[in-house]
Length: 402
Image 1: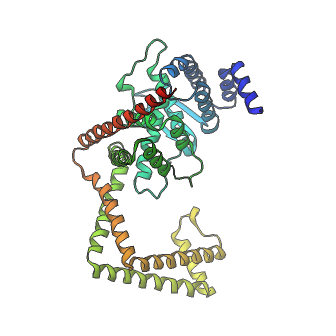
Image 2 (image 1 turned 45 degrees about the vertical axis):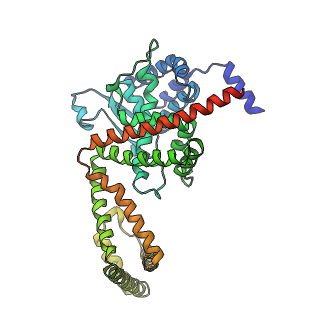
Image 3 (image 1 turned 135 degrees about the vertical axis):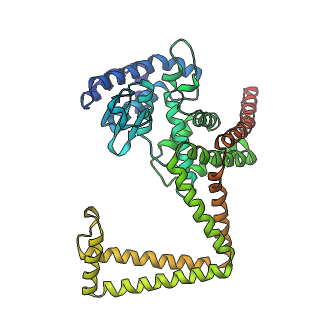
């Protein structure tokens, strides 16, 4: 009952978001230009959002949208620095138009409202919103959805000027990210995506929930096809925009390819596992000898600290002993894992897992990257239109019932 009363009061008492933001900015060490652009951004969003929401129903309410922006400024922004193109300060961000440093809660960007709003959206997000169980896409699809959401957040400011809805492609940070995010927005809804992106309970497998939701609403075949293309295109887009990611994938590709080649020769595979088990057993024996002999433990303490930088040094022999006990446990677990690989069923599963990984990783070797992205995007739109037709048919049926 209390909550209903509060909601009713919210409707009849207009919130002054400018005052709310000004109160927060008084406690921040931002210069006047930063405060001015933040207030100006908020004013433009407030002015345009009613008409924006009229056009785009599948979006946050104005109150939800603005409160979210204000909270991010309050909690996640300790420093905002505005710079001019071709200035001395521009060297900080290189050839980019912004830099977001989440660990420092710092934003450096051009003095452009939509750029600053993009950065504010970006700084609040977790790097990964997909569990590590999903090889590779835990990073690539997380990034695709996060960037798509950042671009979508800027939409009310970027595309609506109070008189007309105008989309200028060159002002959109990435057409690929935006197109796919809009697909997801239409098919699974704004609330679902928001809950996924803002999810604080990382034990929840939102990828599994997404798959089940897609199956329930659009059928298993459409779900399998859409998600498979989504996985592949997320990897290719990540390679396109992130040089470090491409280098990492190339190395992973070589490693997985080598592992797969090794297990093709069963005899050699068994020999390698046996060799690794002997090595681990020897290391466990050495740990046992060391932790049970004070003089050997002292020697190990000195030896390790000589090789470690100051901030990583081990501060007592007791800590070293605990560390070695942990290392011993990890080596035993590794031996048990290797023993499992010698079982036929586990061997087949392991081989299949490597083959699946290689199927994703070999995308890194595609020569004409943009052509492949365009091809997959067209395929994704075909599946999207099938799903959208299913969605429309359900709406038609509901309309006929009522």
